[in-house]
Length: 84
Image 1: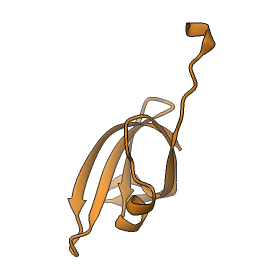
Image 2: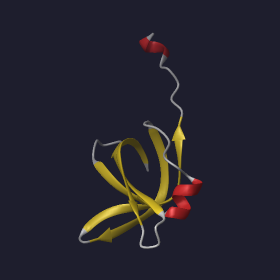
Image 3: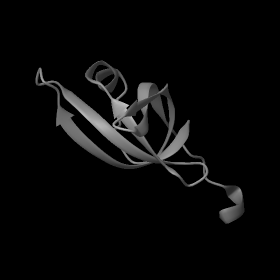
């Protein structure tokens, strides 16, 4: 999935480890929630706003689907020469 990073929420697990829930806008303008468990968050942190390429699996908790992140990366955007 490719998404524009909108917001984040940090929480601690039962063991006190940091994990994160993220919200992204997909290419169709729909909100997609993500779950970043401690090992994945440590290896692939969300460092800033921007467009991310996200790989994961769809999971459903309490009737709400979300994307459990396996890996993600910020995609650098190049300026569009037509807008200069």
